[in-house]
Length: 159
Image 1: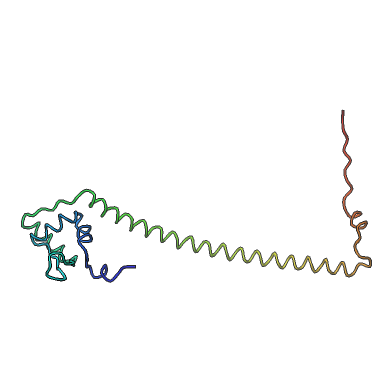
Image 2: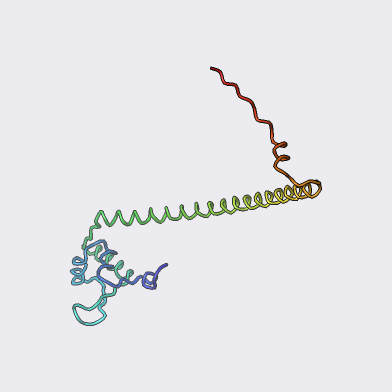
């Protein structure tokens, strides 16, 4: 979630200004002497600074028009390119996530339906067993259960 400062384009520290320009803090502080548009919250040299992104962009354009070249560091250019690539990848991942969630919901609905059918089937089998037991005259005994089992198969040993 973006903070209020990020929405309005305010940079609140030398570190933020330097990161925005792709330079070191000391370099950006030196640029204040040549007109970098920063505002100090008090009149002291050590007072906190605030800068508007639009003001900095305008200053850069006018400075370049007057021959003040600001070479972008390769690291800064990579970071900007990397940021764009990261945003594109995040959008792709988000759309894939939406598809995966839809597939999960469908699979979950099928699973619930299958479980409900199995429960009904099990309830019918249990009810049938209960009816058979209540209809039979004698309770199940071990000897009756043994008779219902298949006969053990004989095995022959060859020596």
